Image (cartoon, rainbow, N blue to C red; front, top):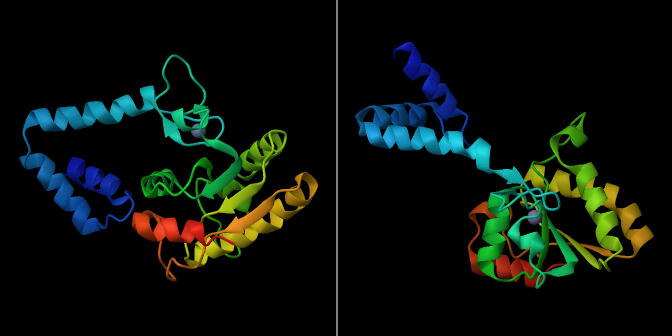
Amino acid sequence: MPDTLTKLAELFNRFPGIGPRQARRFVYFLLAAPRSFREELARGILELSKIIHTCTECQRFFSPARGATLCPLCADPTRDRSTLMVVEKDVDLENVEKSRGFTGTYFILGGTVPILEKNPEERIHLKKLEGLIAHRAKEGLTEVVLALSLTTEGESTEEFLKEHLTPLAEKYGFKISTLGRGLSTGLELEYSDPETIKNALKNRQ
Ligand SMILES: [Zn+2]
């Protein structure tokens, strides 16, 4: 592969779930695609840094209208602000929304904490979560739902969060719950169907 192609393949290889072989297939697909497609793709990628910001409350990515700092979901007055659900990433939030089983608000952790991680606070937005909880506590927060994947990393993240949030729960008087084990072991929120998510929410404890 010529240099440019190798470099591009290495970039695709960094995408979630994409291995080196698939990355090379993407490159050859682009080579064979019309020039207009490549240009549209490149423009779309460049636009991302101009239009996408993170919500100051839930930390999800969104395109703000006229300098808004809150995403449409956090700004929605019909959402129940007494319940806060903590998920790992944006796509998990989208999947829970699709299930229509949750009317509260969210917080995107931005990652997971593997077992024996030396600097867990650099991998997730813990300080921002604690800040949001303190803020919401004044508005009558009653429950924080930890909705992490049932994987080894998800479980160690849940333990880490429980450890840090329990003192806050005692101070502000809210409950910490986790998803019902209707989700089978090893299943990730990202790949769960709406019905499974709805049941896991109903059976949260
Ligand atoms: Zn938000």
